[in-house]
Image (cartoon, rainbow, N blue to C red; front, side, top):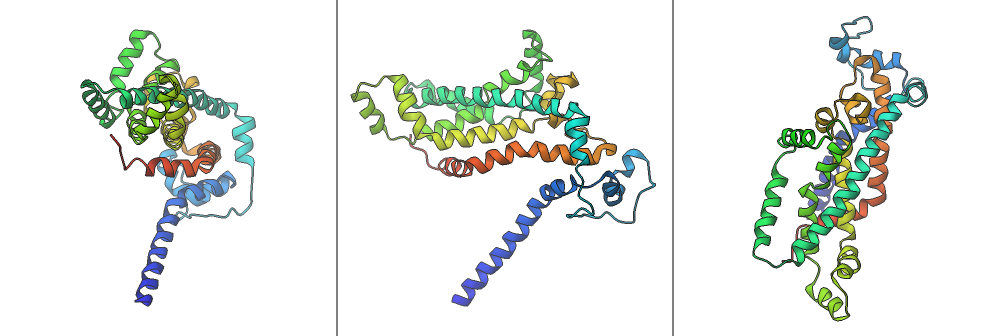
Length: 293
């Protein structure tokens, strides 16, 4: 039995290692290739991008996936950061768009979730079901209504056309409501007996108890809007206001090396956020399975 158990664990370890390698390989390739010179990138991946440019002078018989550059070069980063300030401008466009969305959406979701948790009216279940239906609707479906409303409000082609719809996304309300319903009612009753009002219960009892859920929701919202493409293309036609994610989706083959460097820079905020709050993320998602009504 012990041999079978050890064999099963070894097999699971090998399978997990293979899947982890396949999952991490694109990220590792992006980082290592960002330190290659453009000529080496062309020699390795020329076949992939030849159909775009029509230039077949550097095409080899096969595509080579190289993890270690022949010569480490910072030329791509120098071009992206110093010689071409447009990339940094688009990076800050992403920051200016995403950070307010995360803060406002989490704040709005916290207030709405507290209302769903404390409100005992008959209309509550219907409203929460309506929120779930909105959450299941893909955002591509709401792009046209958002466009029409933004045009009517006169905020089309401004950052508010992205921030306002992001403030009221139902996904955060759904997850945070489930987390708040897990708070024991006895804890809230004890706070009320001590003379706490609704605002004190919300800020001093409910929010501290949902710290893990709040952080995990903030991370998920940040990742979602940090990688958005369709919304800026439709609601921000002006390229000067579009985030870096739009540029990465429209990269041409002549700037592949720069794209590797910019993509590496673009991953840094997400990786730092994940490493900082991994514990809260796992805790917040794991606790969504049990709901206390």
